Length: 353
Image (cartoon, rainbow, N blue to C red; front, top):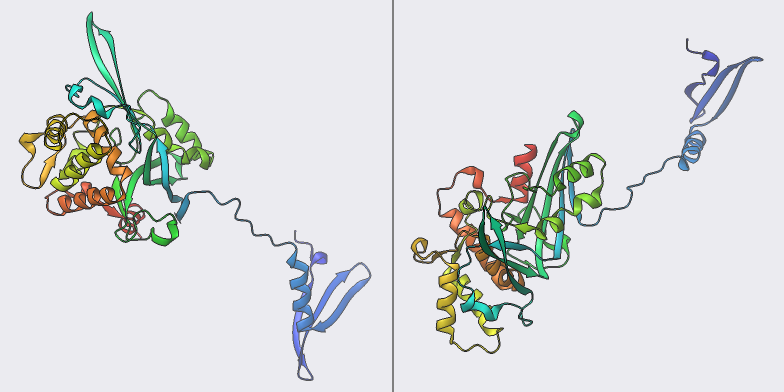
């Protein structure tokens, strides 16, 4: 039962052109009353509460540039202006690397191409493969987007890694100066990535990531791009989603810039530019599927690895490459699932704002 003895009753009244508050309370000794001016009463309430109200955002999470909450769903955007990574792959499909041997272990690039030959037994058959790595690659404009629904014990988790493009200032260091609703989000250039998560294989990181979400371990969540881009890649999911997203199409201009990047930074070459270009074309391009201004990179992770170094090292080439993807998509009949989003359209697609 509610104890009226603990209640304080208030009444407000006017007297002599002033407003008063009358407070009364029942006590064991009878009724106790006090009357004060309204402004004095309000000042008392404000002062009484001033040291009891605390607003604390907590430590601001580095790289988290935007968070949208709708009901039980949270959509977070983490932006990384630059991360240094060393992706690598095993390949039996690179072809003869003898013609481009001068590219490997070259100290003049903004990254280092490594190549090691190894072998293994498969059902009694001795097979040789090459491990190709792009070491110390400064990958710019990386965006991690996470979608988490706290309902149903947090069972709904999805995430994507994007490359961003803003036509006005693509390598601006300050995210607040150029990341906006019109920033374009390109799905990761690397494979092993579904439409809403990454294929981690037997690494066990998928379970770790789920625990990070469920425990609000933001540092663990933020590690996703580093773990992903430092992984051993293969050709899984390479010829489906990414082929249709035109990541393996480049223009003649982009290919020429890639060739010139390597040619001008490779000392001691014994062949001229024409021969050098011919060698790279034979190794990197699918000539039967290249026509006009659309060239097709061979659908192998090894060929892609040779392309990404110059693209991410040269700001102008980066912009040319991703801008060309937009033109390929605009001129194709790709269905909506391969749509390249802006930040605004991506938000609407996930939260239906």
